[in-house]
Image 1 (cartoon, rainbow, N blue to C red):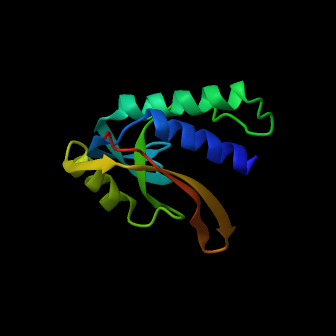
Image 2: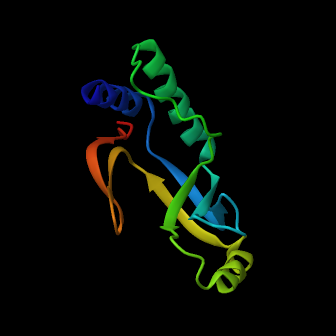
Length: 139
């Protein structure tokens, strides 16, 4: 199955060219009152990211990968910057959410798609790359 997912990512990178995303705003999942995941938002380029997600989902179905589960969450492009284990300093954190909710962090170019592995440890997850597919620049 990993090999089939690599093939799907290679297909995506053959049809999607590098593009820019604009990063802005600070938020949290499930919400800013009880944050578990802190993220920065993507205010432009999300339509390209959503397109990549649609292609991947479609290819998983088309190739009959029954043991690959489709993410049931609504697609919400973001960049995770922290995971919280406790609510220590929660009031200070809430102030940061207010201060940075509309802050523009900048623009970056999306040039690759990574298949990640998450290894859970007592001190938190460790993420590693299983595969990197690079978007092809136009010739």
